[in-house]
Length: 139
Length: 95
Image 1 (spheres, each protein chain N blue to C red):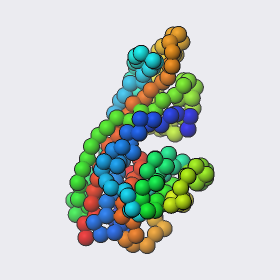
Image 2 (image 1 turned 60 degrees about the horizontal axis):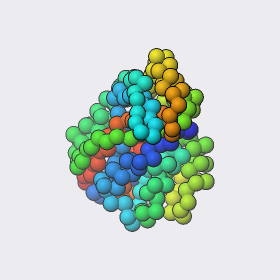
Image 3 (image 1 turned 135 degrees about the vertical axis):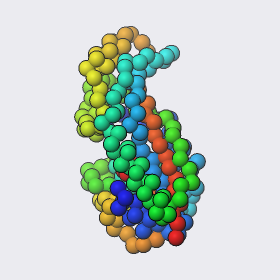
């Protein structure tokens, strides 16, 4: 990771900006949303990705400590994915996040129960937290 | 991906409030299918997106909708560019 940051440093112009934006491995609810409200089906376990978060944060700290970048802004904000069906969600998790998240059978079962209720415009929502850091290249 | 990803536009909104993209030369590392790239690509002078996945880059290229966006198969640890050519580097969930 530090090597990638040093490559970013190399190809940036003097005082160029590096933006690091990535999801945080913070447990989040799986929500069933509909026209007039929402219900939680339970919590998605994001803990498998914590080690990667820690490694990424350490890499950033390392290049800031080495004074090749200076931190100018860090913020955390909400960011959501929506699916129409549980199968679609499970397909995406299997393809993209298999090693990063755990959705328990209990949560899937509860989501299925909530989705089966006759309500308009029902969707599955998973709201993540994204961290955006802005760093200026130093000469 | 079957999901609707960030239809509220939170990611690009926070990106735009963090830095001025207009007229800049930008490298996006980990562009994937270019879903984020497409949301801001009309502003910069030039955008280059890189990703290791060729199939994702084909989707990004097909849907780019601008003439200033370019997609290249590469990884962040070995960037195929000379020194000092980009004004902004975006690490898009790729660190």
